[in-house]
Length: 114
Length: 112
Image (cartoon, rainbow over all chains, first blue to last red; front, side, top):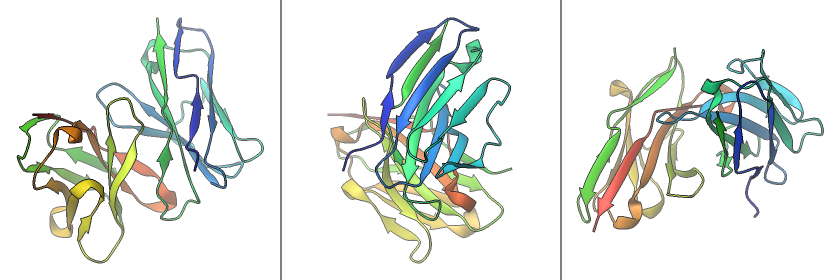
C-alpha cells in the first residue's frame, strides 16, 4: 500500500514569514496526526483529526499554527508568522481509526527558520 | 503529567553485542506501549507494541521488549545486533484516542 505522503520535504523561510505543509494519509485511514519534532527530542503531537473533526489540539500554538482537513482526507498545517523556535521536522501520521491502531508516519518536512 | 523517559541518548556497540535500551513512563491509566525505529533517511516505523497479555512482546528483526508494570518500564532488547540496526529508537506510550507520547529517542550506532 502507498504510505503517508508529505510535501515539501524541505523548506527554508525567514522569521515572520508564513509556510504551509501538506499531508495525504494512507487511503481509508480516518485518523490523521501532525507532530512536531525538534532536534534532539521525540515527536510531539500538535493536532489529531478524526475524519474532518479535531480530536485533540491542546498542544497546538493557536496564535500562529492552524490545521485543517476539510474533506476528511488530506490535510494542511500552516504557520503564520513563523518564529525561530519553529525550526523542526513536521511529521504527519495516519491510522485506521483512533482505537488501538498503529500509526504510519510520512517522511516529514524539515523546516528551517532564518 | 504523562511522560516517557529514555535512559540513553547515544549507544555505541560492536556487531554481535547484546542491546538493551531503557524506557520508563509516567501515565495515570491503562497504557499501550510502543517502540518505533527510524533508520537513516527513512520514516518512523513500528518495531513492536504492547496492549495487554504476555508482557514479553516480540517485534520485527529479532527485537523484543518486556513490560514490567511495577517498574513502569518497557525496555527494548536484542541478543545480537547487526550493522543494519544502526538507527534512532523511540519509546512511546498512548492512552485515550491513540495519542502517542514519545521519549527523546536513543541513537544507536553499530560498528562492524
